[in-house]
Image: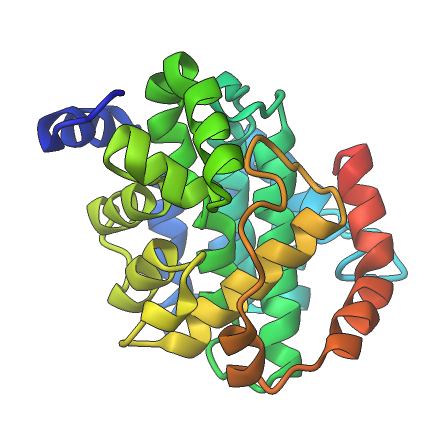
Length: 281
């Protein structure tokens, strides 16, 4: 049995790269009431790789514009500052979340598909449930599994132990992580969010996205991410070692005022987006 020390975890978190400087610049601009769409577009355009990713996402089925968005400034005008901020964050995270994670049986691009799908689903469910901070839900959904990137190096050696622990004792994969490693990916993800100075309710949502009942600061946010995560897993979007071993919380469903048929409706309405994600945006 491997028991990780806090020093091991802190070292791994510190080794994780910071967000690109251009992403921070765009976050600042989109929070500046004096900034224009052209200002934001110019900042995005300074990074060619980021520009390509932003335009690819802006032209995806999720946003559904009939004409092709050709420039970063145009994307900013059409999507608005809060949405473009989220899209830029996702574009900046693309490479990190696209890594192969052998410790979680996730191939190249699998975690990205699941994370981006959960982000889009979180935004969608937040809007449907009249949750005010829609883009906060998007960000929490995007980053909910970032802890797997940290724990992957440790999981490579003990993956089979964790899977066996979950199967033999009929417990969730998350609890099996706790027993074998001494930590779980959700808690570690919250540490990453704290390192990046993200808001406290996002830090909490990452920590409790499998156990939303434990969230105190913003339980609705944790519930939105939890349901979105489960929904994307049920659709086979980037499902890894934990698969469907983490049960859907009845508490989260009740908190958001959702019933069983709602999930079927959500799947139907998001199907085009998820098909596009499976193919690779």
